Structures are given as C-alpha cells and as structure tokens.
Image 1 (cartoon, rainbow, N blue to C red):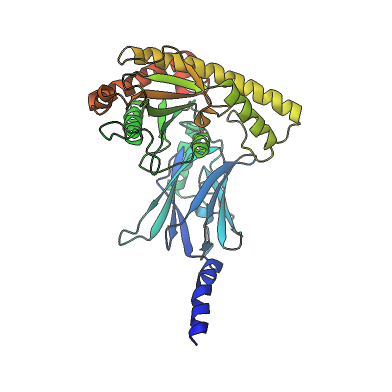
Image 2: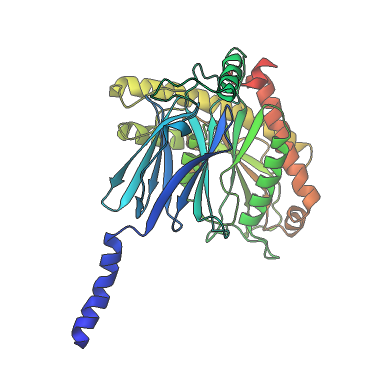
Length: 407
C-alpha cells in the first residue's frame, strides 16, 4: 500500500502536466479608439504567454501555456476597426493559440493583472497601429450577418469614421530604450555598492519621460523593472514595436584603473554586423521580415543577401550619424572618455534594420563618477543630452511617414 501511494505521488506531476492548469473564460474589447484598443483576457490563473504579429494577412497571435478556452465564444458585434475576427486552436496538446485577424499592422504591449475582488486574473493586451492615427478605409465595427437597420448611435459612429478616413495623419517616431542588465545580472558594481542595472534603469526611465513630452515621438522601455531579459529578446522586443531607433543605456567599470571616467557611445562593429547577416540568411525561412516591409523568406539566397546588405548599410550609416549627434550633446554636459564613436560586437546592437547605439554613461569604478551617477540632477543632464542628440538627428533624418517629417 505504501509503495502504491509513493508511485501515485511520483506520477502526480505528470497528471498535472497532461491537463491545462489555466482556463480562458472570455476576451473583451476595452478602451477602443480609432488607432488603438485594449483586449482583456479573463483567466483562472496567471499564464506564461508569447505575443507576436504576422503579415499577409495581418494577424496578432497569442500563445498561452497550459491553457484551454472554456467557452470559446466570440461575439461578431465585438469586431472593431482593428480586429475583424478571432480564431483559436489547441497547441502542443495542452497550450492554446488565439489568432486575431487584423485590418492593419499593429504593435502590441501586454501585462498581467492580479484578481482585485471583482475580476479574475487578466492578461491585458494593448494594440496600437503602426501609425499614430491609422487610416481605415472601411469600418467593421458594426458588421453583422443579418441586414438590420443601424441605430442612430451606430450611424453616428460610422459617419465619424468615414470623415476620419479623409484626414491625413502621420505616425510617431518610436524609440526603444534598453536599460542594460537587470534581475540576476547586476552589471558593474561601484565602490559604494552602486549597481549598473539600477543606474541604467533610472536614466532609461528619465529619457522615456522626456521623450513622452516631445511631439511626434514615442518611447518604449525594453525593461521597466528589475528583471532579466536575454540580449536577443531585447532586439526582438524592439522589432515587435517597430522601433525607428534603439538606444541601450549602460554604466562602465574598469577596476584596473580607478582614475578612468567619462561617457562613451558605441555602435555595432563590422564583424558583428556580418555575423548577424549570416545568421539571418541561414534562418531566413523562420526569421522575421525587415521592418520596412521587405520579405526575405520568399527570396532566393542571392536576392536576400542583396536586400539584407542594403538594409544593413543604411542602418549602419544611420547609427553612425545618430551616435555622433548623441556624443556631441553629451560632450556639452559630461566628461567624455572616447571622443569618437566606438565599434564593438555588442549583441543588442545587431538589428539589421533598426539604427542602434549603446551609451556608456560613466565609470562606476571611479568613485567620483559613481557619486555623480547617484545624483538625480546629473542623471537628468545625461538623459536630456541623449534627447538633444535624438532630436538633432530626427530634425534631418525623420522617416518620411512620420509627423516630424511633415512638420
């Protein structure tokens, strides 16, 4: 009998794995506007999830680990100008894949909410179009199979959407800000115990707050808390948000010489760019397409190589110009360690289609500089100088479909 109980206890984890541990009860549309909307997925427990988008046709995919959809119902009346329909199917036996058919390409951001007494666990998914004010030619907000006479309220909404399609709008420039290290990876540590991950996050948040005040710009924080993100995942997140620029914030250390101090700006080396190109070509069937809409997966190797080379060449040129602008602005307010843009094989700078730079804000191994980096006013000077460099760059090189380009 004791042996039987022991065997049952040993087998219990396998029984648990066989059945989904979470249930999806419903999906609701919340806070809907012409260019963005919020989806609420009501769940019985917190879930591990993965979100990504696909093109041709435009789709948003949400994979939920160990989850099943209880009702699997979706009311057509919930369709919107962004989401036409929702489909779902089991995946890997115990996972769930939910697919949203979209009318336009979108960016997404998601987070989990705990129960609050009246609501269950919720996965919140914010959807934004790739343009600040997306133009949708035809509303599907009130499409129904039956030919019912629309109400006055429905006619009013449809009229507003029809008028809106005749307006000309441009999107915001998207800037991905990456706070280096985080979580179990503290980065460099100063003599007074200051950790690089903390300084990087504070300056990243300061920069994001400053960008939020700029007309025509929008900041995305790759890491907004003290947690670890793999380096390649940081690139993937920037691509998910269709970033026009990627800036990674760090603080240096050189214990062998505590007198070294000053800020520096880095971009990817030719070696790093070449190795990333080789990786993309080797995996082009599964790799994401370039942000500009160029598809590699359906091209032969030679054409894919040419397209990737063109994209990388433009990206490297943009990174050089951006880096020089930021370095010039930093030189006005802080000490500089390297007076020229440095090249290094940093993985987070390898995106072939997003201009990327890495800013070393100072040396924590230098006691004076560590003290300065702990001063809020000094950190503000750094963040504001980076913004000055960004502003200077986009005044001359704003993407043509953005608000700044049409100002």
